[in-house]
Length: 97
Image (cartoon, rainbow, N blue to C red; front, side, top):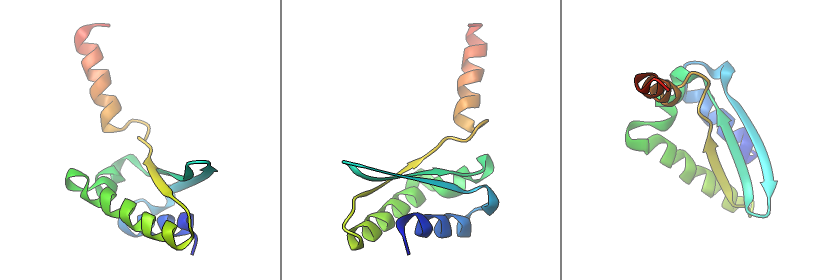
């Protein structure tokens, strides 16, 4: 199984909206970069308490990468309308900017 296929399978198994899971794969001189996009409501399940789930996923991807002689990195994309954006928008509104 490829690193991209493994990540898709893993994430779809833990989220409530598996049809919204998207994984993009890019290869450069630094190795493989997997960019993960999930439904906004699923971000908490992917990140986990204090980032524990995302750390475990990154560890598993490193192991998959070692088997394929590649360095695999994971970037979790902030979804549209995510919590981070709403907090920034709220703060900006509070400042009347």
